[in-house]
Image: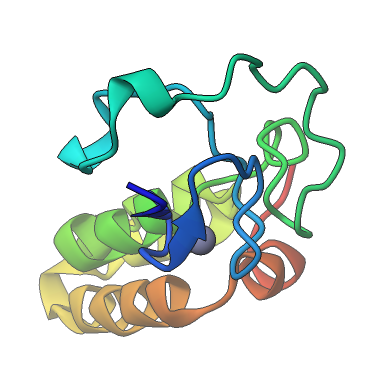
Length: 135
Ligand SMILES: [Zn+2]
C-alpha cells in the first residue's frame, strides 16, 4: 500500500505523488478505480492535486495538434485506399491524389500508398507534420 504503479508507464510510484518521476505523467492521487492497485482506501492523502499541469512534452499538447493532420489516419488511408490517392487528398495534395486516381488501374498507386502509409506511421509526429502535413 506504500506504492502503486504509474498508469502511464507502469513504473512504481509512491501513493501520494502527483507526478510520475519516470515519465512525467500526472497522476491523480485519489483514484480507487485505477488499475485495481491495492492500496488502502483509508490511507488516501486528504488532499487532491489542485494545480493544473504546467509541463507537457513537445508534441503532446492536444491543442498544438488541433490543426494537424493525423499521421495514423493518413497512414491507414494510404495502406487501405492508397490506390485511389485518398491519403493524398487527406493531406491536401490534391494534385497527387488525382494522379493516383488516374493511375489506380495500374496498381502502382496502391503499392505506393502502402509504402507511404508505412512511412507515415513510422514517422514521428513532428517529422510527419514537417514533411507531409499541411494545414
Ligand atoms: Zn510513469
